[in-house]
Image (cartoon, rainbow, N blue to C red; front, side):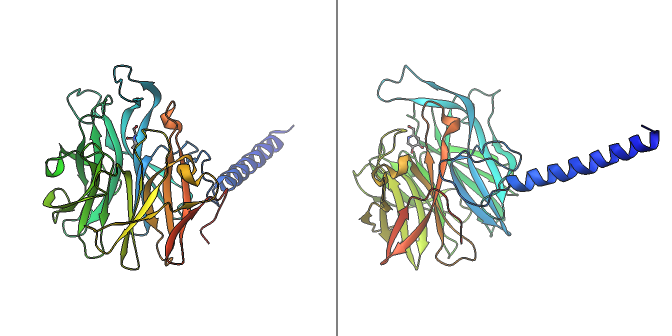
Length: 343
Ligand code: DGJ
């Protein structure tokens, strides 16, 4: 081959490989939700954002979740329940415009391997982080469940950031209104008020507390709900001026039947409607547990119910089960779909 031919050959090879790479990338882009399947981010890594929630801000969705360490182990010294855990890797954030293709924005609240006294040390527990934006103080506010390895601490933790992609500054943890705070979520209403919803009294009763103007503390106004009904994993949304809350029962990492309740005000009173899941495996919430309900932007009455399918012996491999939540005869319904699209 002459030098000129060699160069032309190399050039053709380059053009071809750019074309192939482009095609592969676009073929990889996701076009439908496949509940329970490994969900890869835009870099090709499995999404690591468990027990998560989504915030919509300035045209982009941000998904925050538990960034789990890659080995799961059982604490044998905890004898009252099967205490499987993975080291805490902090809170992760992914961004997306279409809810299907997610870009990893990094760990926005980092764990602190060098400080064994910190709530954020890998040996502790950070679960169910949720973020809302406070327009008044222009801060992104994160609430999360902070635990000791045996889950006896029952604290709520708070962190703030100037940007949705962090870094978040950790403000500390405490027992809101003097009681336990385990599984939790936060909800920002249309009037700008925000609420912290959390399992208290050894998970027997769900508390709902009004937050202060900065969303960083409780006001002291709170209600006790589902008293002695042992509900956890709260996920709240608003539809046609009514508030809805999906909860699970308390069976550790194992699935159980979900329940949905409705109220005219966030602080209650809440009326239980029953299991919103229908069809096969509805009684075990499709082998998953609720974490969030997302109202889809610019699509009226369109909601996505987000669940975690925990894999207790390999927690990082817990899968995401996202399903459409619709209303039939005024009642919320979640039906299994092998694959589905937003439209
Ligand atoms: C159920 C909770 O909903 C999860 O977030 C986690 O805390 C597990 N229990 C631990 O067993």
